[in-house]
Every structure is written in C-alpha cells, then in structure tokens.
Image 1 (cartoon, rainbow, N blue to C red):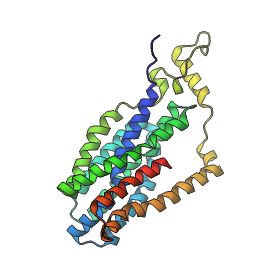
Image 2: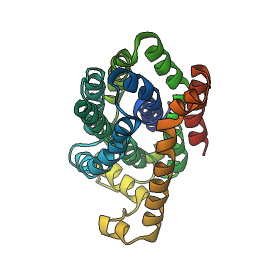
Image 3: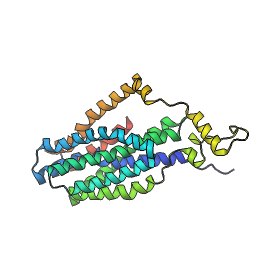
Image 4: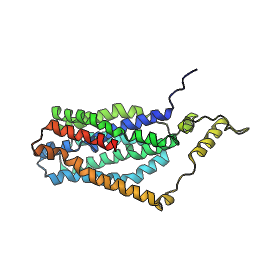
Length: 288
C-alpha cells in the first residue's frame, strides 16, 4: 500500500514558522544588541534610541489594517512577499543611517514590513488550510519565533565580529535568500490545489452532475462553517479580551527585550551571558 503524501498544509505551517523565526530575530528579540553600539557611535541618549523601539510598536499597530486589506485584496502570498522585501530594504536602510531621523524612519519601515510577515498572514493562511487540526497547526506556526534561541546568537555574533551595520546587511540577505524563495511556495487555500482542509477526502461528497472544482469549493465551505463578520467580532467579548491580553503582553515584554542586553552588560555581566539570556527569551515565550 502506497504511503500517503504529506498534506501540503503542513508545508505551509513550516514555511510560516521559519519566516516568523527569522523575522522576529531582529525587530522583536535582538534590538537590545543595537543599543550600546549606536549610543557609542552617535552619542545619542538612551531615551533617543529607545524611542525608536516605541515607534516600532506604534507603526505596527497603524499598519495592521492596511495589511488586512492587502490580504483580502491580493492574498497572503503577495502580502508576505511584499513584507519580506520591505523588511529587507528597511534593514539595509538601518545599516546606512547617519542621523536620528533616518534611524527612526528605518524602524518604522521595519515595523511595517514585519506587520506583513507576522501573525496576520500566517493566521489567515493556516485557518484556510486547517479546521480540525487548526489548533495544532497554529501552535507549530507560533513556535517559529522559538528559533530565535538559535538565530539570535548568530545575529549577535555577526555584529560582534563585523559591526552592527554589517549585521543588518547580513540579516537582510538571510531574509531575502532563505525566506523569500519559500514564501513563493505559499498557496492561498487548499481548494486552489484541488484539496480540502486537513487533507479530507471528497469521497461521498460529490453531488450528481456537479463538477469537481465546484464540489471541492462547496465541501470546503461546509467544513469551515460560517465566519464572523467584522461587526460581529467587534461586539464579541472574547475578541476584546484576547486583544487586551495581547496588548498587555506586548507592553510587558517589549521594554524587557529592548533593554535586557544593555542592562546586563552595565551590571557587569559578560556579552556571552547577555546573549544566552536574550536567546532564552523566545524559547520561553514559544513554550508559553
């Protein structure tokens, strides 16, 4: 008996997990490694530098509705690929900044690119590919940033050896060479490949005289059930509790991630210890 092929939806999960892991290495988990080198080079205050990290969060929030529109209008693959290109260009811009306004602008653009490659694209795509196994698929996708435990050390080592500017150029190339090619393999829905969510079989679900494509679309819609409208979501208490929980968790983790490395080194800790502590953070978060 021939062994069944791996359902293509699981390849989607692996693609998004890798992209989230590589993308979160810089903007989310490793910004602390930029603080001291930038202060030493430009003489800016800690407040001036940390303002960029605040702008990062605000830019992401402002960009989120636009990212949602792009997903609805052009699909997750277009949005994901566009986000990866913007993300890489913003790292290259960051590598060449020579004034505070360019520094702030590069972080804002970086945040916009990150919005397009982060949770929205992954969440929408995986929800289309899975119904029964959606929880497991989402869990695996959002464990992707746990890769930061490995990639943070690589990113930090590049900056320590070649400087913080070279680190941004190197990571822009990592994103373009390892993320963009696999992003092109993303497919909007299983129906467009003649498949059903979760790899379900069409056996016994084709009506007389019904074409295969029409039958697959009908069956896929039946499996997914009805979706909430925007108005229904905004009047749902669960939505607001989830939004509040995510907002508070981001507010709590953001300053710690941004200031962990400079705080540890100023307290007398070695750079190696700071890297180890910072690298453990994404692993803990993905476990939670």
